Length: 292
Image (cartoon, rainbow, N blue to C red; front, side, top):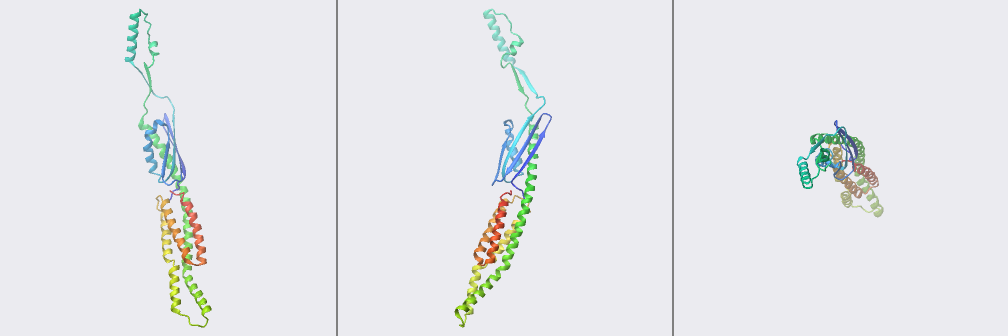
């Protein structure tokens, strides 16, 4: 199954106190380029998230956006720094004794002193955070892959039809090729008869000329390689692997054979088929740029 490089996926995961939402957008790219944007407290999970994404996506520019929401009563830890409070009380007692002050240090006084009372948010359960975060990303990746698969199926169908068109065209060229040599022989004989009139024509020399022409214009090898490339391209589409780069290479080879056929054939009908093949190949090339 072929996959497109473009797509979108969204996933959510939540508990009683928090929720993660992940959105993934992917577009064409030569390599697998992953960018993750998420709240700073969770950046330590970035590499693990990259692994999840890379396991499912072989190629494309992938942008991941993660949103975090917290709700419900949050747990807090409130602690008192007794040693600091004692230090304040000792200092206050020393001032009282030195200056004969009235003792009015109370609990409310201590609570107003900075750093006596510390309020800390309870550390979140890291395992719970990871389970929710990874679940949201996996859901988004699953949706993205499904969309890329649907798009890839459409692209593969179009490419397959165009490969069939190329196959039909090369068979027409193969059917036409033998006639090119025969027509050349007839033209050569007619020309020689016109030039030499009743003089004897050297059949051996004519045969030698025909052999040279056949060697220069023979396209049997190109047709064989062309058919092989087409068969490999058709096989790629049903392989279930990332096929974009391989198809791109095969298409370059197909174009190479087409150009050689066009330059060697020396025939108007074959030249017309070459133009049609180049047109179809260009359309395939455009579609391949969207495949993973």
